[in-house]
Length: 367
Image 1: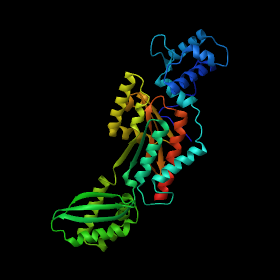
Image 2: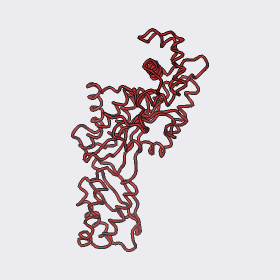
Image 3: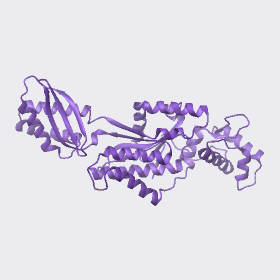
Image 4: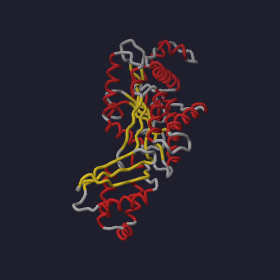
């Protein structure tokens, strides 16, 4: 499993900071990720394997603070990692474990149950994505998010239904029983036979394909189509596919689950304000979609921390995300976790990675 950074990962602590400082820095970060509280020099001196007085620890902490890796939230308080410190920790010091056999079994069971079983095609793949986001929310105590494109959905039936002399309803039935429809203008004087002919022509070639695959096939057989059906039916097919590509075929879908989890660890008024700002971020779906789309280019799990991204510049939140792929190994979506910067990265990173792989395998079974 690889963890991709949006920045060049540093090789270690800044020059001049030794192994002792590295140990102290790690303990400050670990304490923050565990409790959210500042870590003081006295507590650290008790934890160190080497004898070091609180005064000596404070001197090391001052060096770390001068390097921009930690800060004191209040006078005489302990220290917390800065966003720069968290980035360095995640890129250079984070020890990511594996998902246990029991956790793998639980993830697979929950995701497969949402899809109706390992071999079932009777339920919507949207159910799988919704369950995946809910599962990640429960694991992380943050918000689980999934982004995918409807262009990858498979369809089994398509039909043109006249509503008025100049308007038709284009209806699609998914292989999971879901419905999509689009209003479509009709040219004057179009006979009913053209609607039937266009529907029959498309259904003969649909065969549980995506709209993109169907459109590519028809474009490749343009001359053949024009010789098999009348000109008006051919124009209707072209107009219908164009409409679907702009709507059901090309739209992105964002699923967010578990926002309420973010309220469980609110300890102060400033925490409540941070969560309020994060909720506002999640409501701005376009910005969330843009951020998740950046994770599509990663080879593995990608981590965004705080103000590294403008979406979280005020709420001080983090995103851990991984892409998932279809049977042709094309990236077709992204899933992940949004929460405070003190997420349990070591645990959540492998969980996000494994869940993305399970969803990918489910997608292969659905195609």
